[in-house]
Length: 142
Image (cartoon, rainbow, N blue to C red; front, top):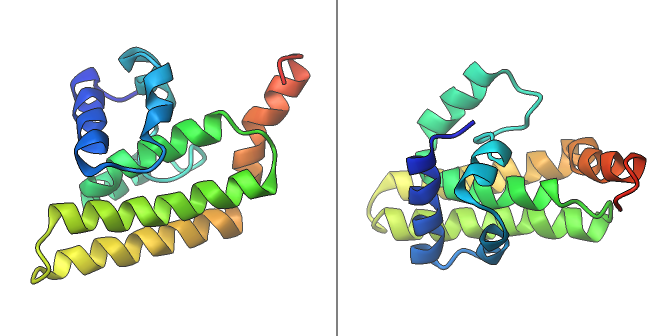
């Protein structure tokens, strides 16, 4: 569970950078977002690994928060899955451009890693995307 001050900071970054899909966050309280947001990397990763990824890529945290919320609302459709991953890539590049000047190598590392993470999600994340949808189906909510 993320710290509430961190959730507020991430919301602000999403707005400041004009990240795509940020409107999805408006449906949730900070407390709800803190419970949904697990950092960079899938929930299946051990927390120490997600903590390491968060430390290596703090500028991608707001991007990951939007992505986590989108996946929690999964509709079980491949188009939605692909769109969410593509949005992660675009938002990661947008955050990198906003956070680092064109002369800073970190800008291009963050851009590359957002592309790489989006590809990893697309290739290996289907079951994680589908899980919340299937849980709602079992619970009679979908």
